[in-house]
Figure 1 (spheres, rainbow, N blue to C red):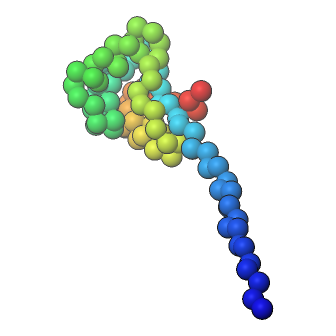
Figure 2: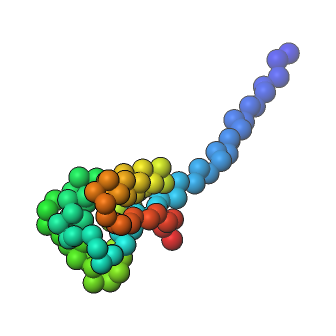
Length: 102
């Protein structure tokens, strides 16, 4: 005599993967780095158009700082370092920082 066995599939609970925090790359204004150089760095490192680069540079100039891009932490840190290194090579104190997005 065979018994009917009812098998209920167990539902597996997936651990919720949190999306990695995004980081902002921030351009800080200074009174020494020429505007043309800042725009060139924004175009070279952050792949901005001439117009976008000018807008970001002017915003940082007027407000003291400007968010350039928001991306994954490692990319943000790499881009910021690349931009600062370019400025250092050219003898300018241009600064880019990174911070977690709220």
